[in-house]
Length: 335
Ligand code: NAD
Image (cartoon, rainbow, N blue to C red; front, side, top):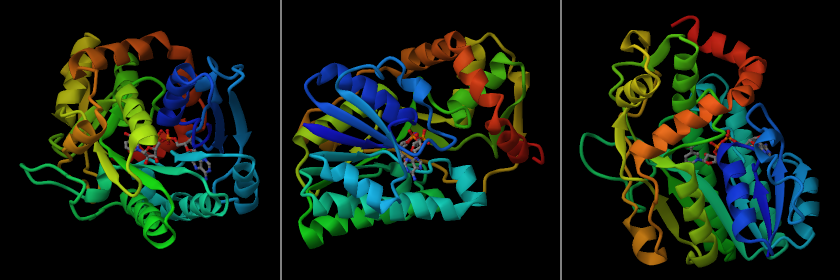
């Protein structure tokens, strides 16, 4: 099978390529990525010489290029490509609509034109909006996205659904909770806090720190996508989650304690506008229907992840010394 992986140089996409090239040596994997600030080919140094892996630099909104790549025998498309950071979507929503909505439509058109056998959209639980203190998101929870990021992902999800209902395109959508693990860009909560703690910098926590997220190790997410790619029923949505609800402040305190640093480094900052209070996933459908279960336990997974960032300091230093630094200063200096 020839699989096009859009956005394969980002956090989850690169973990997925590493996971899949090992498991399916007879498949061909084409990584199609624009290499935005979040794309990093260094993540793929362990696979870039493999015979079953190829990289093409390209933008998913570039219709001609996407079509020429898909026309070359692609049988499945998995779309990870996105602008993915909520804070950036609040200050620059345009690029979120362009990449996440219009880019997905270009990929769908190419899939339809060249009769691709599976289109798998990697989406997020954020499309469901926010929960109160109880309850879980199921696949039938209405979409009620609250940020420009999540609304652009919800828009893409509806297009994917429409291409199934209208044109019969064989699609699936996965909606996963927050991921953690190696190669996550240092603007996201867990790597940001680990790196600041290592550097004895303050750890900025939004609002009261009591927002709840359901954390899943990225490898468990990759395994879930593998299950859906091979066993998913066309047209179905599958929620993916780890049953690991944690408040942001619990995460930050776990990181500080693991690194032997003081809680005095915590600095509460003005809350993010429209900040969803709680996400929690009911993943029973993918478990019952496709046999997926997560293998990581959060307590050991987070320790392993902290160790990874300690051991791969050169990887994140190259990132934070560059363009990212200017963004970080703009984002947090005024709070
Ligand atoms: P990321 O920001 O680390 O990576 C995104 C990748 O997409 C980068 O390599 C970037 O270069 C590429 N890209 C961006 N715009 C592009 C374009 N126009 N054309 C081609 N490539 C482009 O994101 P991530 O955390 O790896 O997330 C991947 C996907 O999973 C996203 O769709 C996101 O919505 C979804 N998701 C993420 C999480 C999470 O916790 N990180 C959870 C659930 C779902």
